[in-house]
Amino acid sequence: MAPIKYPHPNPSKSYWIEEGPNHLKKHRTTKELPTEVDLVIIGSGYSGTSVASHLLLSNKSEKGEPFNGSILMLESRDVCAGATGRNGGHIRGNYQSGQASFIENFGEKIAADMVIFEHNELHKVKKLVEDLKIDCNFNFRYSSQTFDDEKTYEAGLNDFYAYQNNKYIPQYLKDMIQIKFKDDNDPLLQHKVGPFSITAPTSSVWPYKLVTTLLAKCIEKGLNLQTYTTVLNIQRGDNDTWLVNTERGVVKCKKLVCATNAYTRTLLPEFKGKIIPVKGVVSHIKQISKEGEVNEDINRLHYNYYHTFPLEGDYVTTHSNNSIIAGGGGKTYLPYPNSIDMFNNMDDSYAPKETINYFKSYPNKFYPEFAKDTKFENDYTWTGCMAYSNDDVPYVGDLTNFGRKNVFILAGYTGHGMPRIWSCGEYIADLITGSKASDVPDCFKLTLERMYNHKHALFSDLAGYDINNRGKFKL
Image (cartoon, rainbow, N blue to C red; front, top):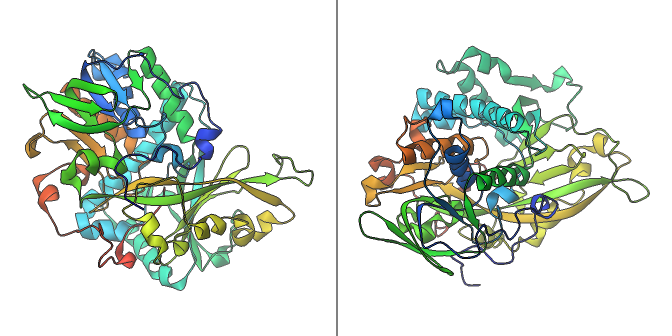
């Protein structure tokens, strides 16, 4: 199978998209594609939507006058059809998870900055949803990270104590993270855990509803959204402008935002080896009564979960209709030959059969008491393309110093976008307008060192790839 450069025209069906609102499906704000605009945003997922929202919906008293130029958003497929419409449906900060490696790679201060940033992000989105009355099934919860193999115990404890000992993390954030040993008999824990688990704040959310609601509000403020308009390439125009070549014609713009995540290197080849597509698999599991109807009376899982395995973890969220979203299944596709279907591959139309089968009867395997006397059905199992960066943090900023004046990027979230994207979009919006920029952790920003540092080589050809030293693969 030849590799693809652009989004597949017939992706696998995601529960979020198929069962979500249809008011923006196949949307084109204008019949014809404009030939010239002030700003083009490529990508209609959470990243592109965040940038547009901060330009068009921001509070005047906080950010000055709203952006008054013309904004065109281009999407290759239908609205929000990429990773945002295919993820695990939660906003889960790392908190202690990965803290030891973050300290090793970036130092204690920046590791703490990321913790504070992601914690604040959860509450920013909560406030956003409340202020704009967005119906997106947002539900503040707690997540339990379990350690399901003795190979993971030591790493889990190292992260916890590195977090608790980091002098730059405020005490109130340290107090939120609780380690629960098996002998504690946590009455809420429905999973058969190893010797301990760690709980932290999180939320469940319907990502497609969140994005499409925000986009509808942006359209009311002047955004021109054009779906089914693939960007083939971008070229430099005159006077620091850019020509965006699409299958429907050419658009000239003064400024350009690439919110293309897994597809970034197609348009910005300098990110080859720095951002690589990695596919993940997610399944929607609904509870069925004896009569074959959806059972909405049974209690939900008390926690969202992250189950830590030696190679890759599973993540589980519960939603208001008691359905379960489970993602991961790495042990079915990390080994060759299924790994070829998942790494360096942007085709989200299929997933390995072994991975699809892995999620069948998932609650019975992992939550036997919860699943007792209950029937489950996997009505949707799908795949989506994430974007892994070579240093495990996103690339956020402008490309002026790299020969692309007036081009901005926010991509490469390494399967961890939901607790970062809203504020990354705000940062880009402020760069575009020249406002006093909001901030993101220093390790997210584009620097000469990051762009020209080959210390962290990506596994673009799968050669020499050490799975034990990579991050956790999740949508």
